[in-house]
Length: 633
Image (cartoon, rainbow, N blue to C red):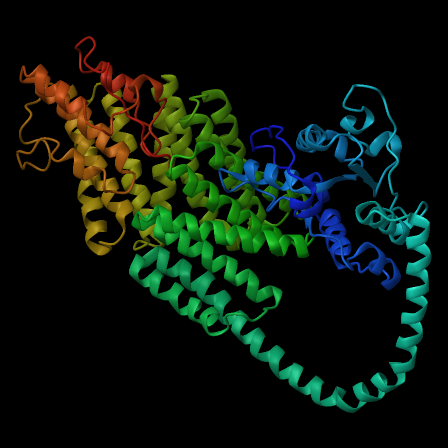
């Protein structure tokens, strides 16, 4: 079902008595709701008593499906193979979307290798014979052409009831005609029994309806008040904290909302409350990521995905549900990238882009959806730039993001947010231009970013997000000055950035991302001094310190990247001192395990580590080194 999984391999079938499932349902994810309804109807069906006495059971064994629409676990394909091996039959859901599913074809091939052709069943729900059958169903295992005999659930054919009975008959090993006859007799008896109690039930309902209505009104009012409170806390109040508070304040806010669910654990909740629960898990993932707790962030992101995936299966057409699911996809991707799982990150970001495109298609004029489309394109541009160094593709994504943000900026309520994102987009375009060698264009983009941030800070001078990005802008300006050979200008920009980063760190010591930004600026100061031929001492803040403890950098947020950068600078310093042996010892550090040339650009600061290695100036000195930084947003 999920094309990101590896292809399943055929295995020997277990003994029939050991099989756990009556069938495994194969479907393309566009037909997930059809497959879920079919699974539920098959598992609920009880054989008529006479037939059950003869075959020895009332219900067929459980029906297997894949566990989720996105493969979050690395062993999902193994789990699917185990389910296929443990199934008596394979049921293929057939619609016009089925023939295009490579994953359905893989499951048919794998099951055919285990059980042959006679245990593969097709079930038609939409389309016609020419449209709905997967190509793998139109040929037997020996290659001979065949036409599947399939229960047809369409109303103009077998219909839902007879289609179901045909599948049940095959799974239970009974005749279709006999099952249909017994089933019809049972339904007549059930209708008669229901008619006998209908009047009594109606009278009972009439006697209690008023009290139930009153209680329901009170419960609805309490629920709506709770939902409004949580929406405010997770929305406007959280935004205020992000702009001017600390991570400790955000954590306290999250815990307050979390207590609501702790007190109501085990209860079912209406849709609006469940949407807030997904939002809470996303907020926790964001805050834990900033603290450097990637394992905790990943766990919360996965939980958010599970909640929103269930809500989407239940309410596939609601924009709020689609939005919640898109946010979950983003956070799964963002944390996976930080953990170094690029394939999962790319898969999740692709899902995020698809979901946001659906939102824009539903309501093109809604600024919120335009913003989401901009974020999605920016993420895809980041992958193209950092992972593949594909400058043309990256620029296309970033310019598409800028177009979406400009459209959102026309909405006065979203203007400041859109302008903030436009400033970030200018930074990305500046990096693309710098890497292309067009320093003039890169400078213009950085100046535009500076103008946008200056305007935002004029209206909200204490906003932490704007100030953090101003530090990043100064770092970008410094790198451009360095590339032009203006070492003095680069040094001035870096020292201004370092001073502001230190101030931000003192305001929010728990924010590990700010601490890592400050440390990165220190390392860029050292690099600028080395490139300028300056003395090693007195590089950082006049303290007379060289790069310092590179191993300690590994404990920071984005630590692998910082430790790699630190080690390369320390090695350059030792070479300048004439100590090649010490340089080689530094480059033998365990966090430099992969060849530096294999890294395109580091994830957070877009450092070309291969070029840094060449700057050491000694042939072969990096041959045993490496430098795979953590992937991050």
